[in-house]
Image 1 (cartoon, rainbow over the protein chains, first blue to last red):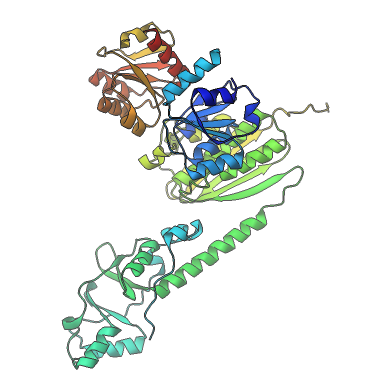
Image 2 (tube, rainbow over the protein chains, first blue to last red):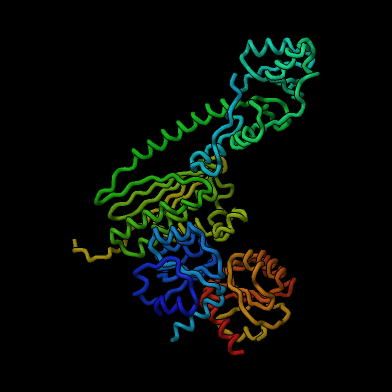
Length: 112
Length: 314
Length: 111
């Protein structure tokens, strides 16, 4: 699916938009609240789904070359995190949905 | 006569270098140990003479190293003005004592000077025995010396970092304890350099992950340390070093899931205990040495297996 | 659905079988136990990689009856014993948290 569909379906607030993300198809989603876990992922990561709303989450996402991060559970995104998103030019989204609900919603989009 | 002024260091506005120093330096590192003391049965006249002789503005009154009170130059002025200079120290000494402990970080002393208006504080050890005195001058001198050392060290590191040339990258980064605002920054920067060089994404991932894990380990578990990267056409070598505290059970540290991180660290998303095992997993060469009291060294080599662009056969 | 219904899933391996069955109405996916304590509901399936005894303590606090450990994480013996004491079921799966969330979501939808 494309990022715009996801933004609409999950009713996301867009905190930073990377130009590239709009073009690519999002296929690989990683769910984690532990940065160390994200670092164990081997394959490509398109979007990191996490409730950690810190600059560290963006840094970790950058290390694994993710295209973007979506912060769930309506967590407030810190100013550092927004700054990091701009620094690495990675899409940063926010949604009120819980991790569980977000996964379900994304899955439904994949099918369509 | 000049009363000691407040120390103009506000925690919220300080750089992380200063914060690092004022928490790392302990009161015992800067205090005066050359104590001029007096006994409770000494007359104030004697106290006055001591102050003049030894050029101090405050005298602790002790009995067998136990601090009983303190007399300041203001107390002497009062005694002179009111005609009781011949009376004994114990009658007029301040007994409401604000003391500092020698193992407290310098930051505490700075806060105390800010909060209380005394010019000096007595310093006691764990057994409440008097071991020194600290004035704001002591803090100034101590900080200046420590800053001097730090800046010299930073300048040396700067000189070591050779400019990026076409083939080789060699850089050393200093990682501060608990500096989560910046921890990971070095790894992000190196990763960007690697992406620009168009290496295979899998190799870039391995280098980035190894380096990042090492960087976070230094910030989370050590008193601060360095991260050195050496990259050429064939490989990336990353070495992490810290001098303290060292790992008590190195063999356990390599086990997946074993972690000594506290709850605060875990709430930040770290401390899952996968770091060292993960570095080993992505590395082609992996070395790790640590001992309690000695510090830790971790070395990783990632060899570049495939190039992104086609190479001519040779 | 009830916890027993999860037994039919070949992606889920039952690790702690001494449990009291219960109705499941939702799922909560998290690796931060503080979040679980604050937001999870008693009738949730908890999907996490935190395969240690603290997870059982938090589950007990919230009233959660079933834990799903993702990414094939090794489950420590003391965790299994603690869960057994509380009659909380533990399943383990090779799937990651994303796929497990989707799987459970689907099962819930199917009733």
